[in-house]
Image (cartoon, rainbow, N blue to C red; front, side, top):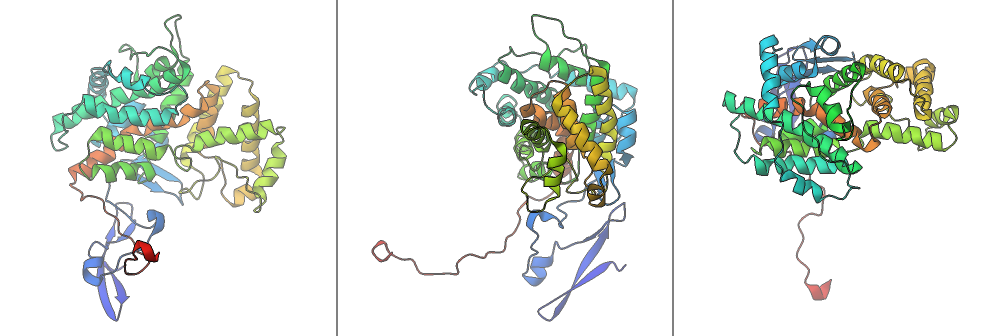
Length: 427
């Protein structure tokens, strides 16, 4: 292929550079397009537009491939833990044993939350959605950490990473405890990061709480699988907010808000709401499968297929086993989980779903696991945010270190042309 693309416009030929990524992806560089032609591209939803060069995540939806910094997601989920993967995403390489231990200990230094944050939390009604509370609390961290982070100063950046990883986990669990009316809990520095999540969520002053190692292992995998996913809606939001040189907490708060939407991080919540709808209407799975096949019926099966993956979601293969392990370990009898199992069987065996690549995705299985652990549906997207945090940090850091320009999309104006002002008496 030539290293230039030729664009013909208004009788003129314009040469545009053609770039290749490390996995042979091809991009036409249109950086000078408007300067050379006066024209812009129109790409609703930016489905065909690359906003940046990135070394973090490679995703091939057609082949069902996901890699972080070159490492296959299958290997990372099987052989690494969440903090190892977090370090890899943010700093570029897998840590050795000493580096990982230092990273975990340095995170522990920042796990205390300023007591005045409770005043902000107290201002929310108990009925507030946890994602709204989390976005607000994350933004509020800026007030307690007002010093601007210099991304080009490695020590400052490292401290900011540790502080963000520490405090975000705690305030995320506080949103649940607020909803339940429980007293706020604190990080236990004698326990691991993912194990701490379960203690922060469920431990009460009145009783000792123990967690099954299989549950910790399943959550660890879930966090790894959610840690980054290239330039999705929330990640692009973090980058574009950060491109104005907004701080790390403010940028992540914006990412939390983007993730909240049902078309993005709210998908696993939508799965459980769908299962509840089926259950509340008699639990007839076959009836709802027929509704899903009827193009004139508004009902849609949630948690099947993927906007990017045109084959099986590689993350779903991994988390299906974890879901089976958790359900087997807990021995839970739940009608919604029974419905989920029936839907899974249909999707994996029915030719209609197989022909359209409508396989169960990571949102389907993560919702099942969270339900089995007794986590309220409203908290599902909060757990997604905990997993996605290192990816957001890595993307913000890369964008700032690379000195990317402020994000400023163009538009094609289709409104009224110029017209004279009409005075009040003539309207």
